[in-house]
Amino acid sequence: MIRISPSLLAADWANLQTDIAKIETSADWLHLDVMDANFVPNMSMGPQVVEAIRHHSKLFFDVHLMILDPAKYADTFIDAGADLICFHIEALENPEELIAHIKSRNVKVALAVSPDTPAERIYKYLKDVDMILVMTVYPGFGGQKMIPAMADKIKAIRTECNRLGLDTLIEVDGGIGAGNVALLSSAGANVIVAGSSVFKAQNPAGAVAELRAAAENI
Ligand code: DX5
Ligand code: ZN
Image (cartoon, rainbow, N blue to C red; front, side):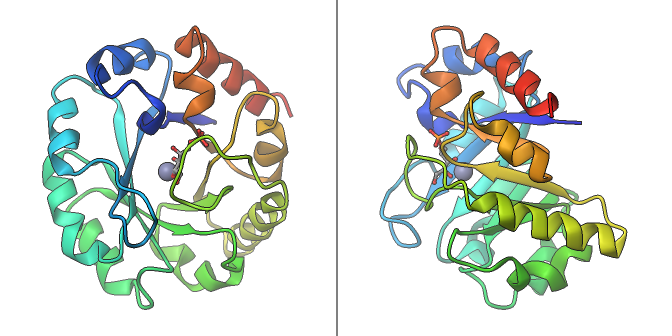
């Protein structure tokens, strides 16, 4: 089953409630990008925004922390309404403790890998996490071009999951639209993040449906 997780980064920030309403019934998750101007050269939302929109959406909140100190802020985002906390392996050399802590708070946990980090780096954590996020652009900005070579990384991780008997979710994020999603879903990705291709579309709900159809038609 494919899950579509529109990235709010590409929405109209003066009208978040209106934009969320446009995809509320067609999307499965809502992807929330948190940037601290340190781990990535950009800033985005903090916990106050997550808490504010929590009152206006029943979607599963997929919180992507692109921050240097995820251990310090994970609880704040859980308290704000996150259903899943995803943090980068590049930010925390030994992620075991934070993985266990997030699970103890009864939310889902994911590890993200940036394009230059080899897949093997996260293999030993596969049995402990709900999802791996394979970045298909360098983290920090919406509207970039998807890196097709990331399909090989997805295949490698899916093969390793199968070898271990795990049905771990694999999420992809960056530069994805109906025209290129099949390359990634056929490689084994089943959670699709899309910012620009959904929120910049004339009809965001229609764009979600198109993405889903393209991802499933493999
Ligand atoms: C990039 C973010 C993405 C971004 C995707 O660092 O993690 O979630 O919003 O946006 P698009 O789909 O426009 O590349
Ligand atoms: Zn993201």
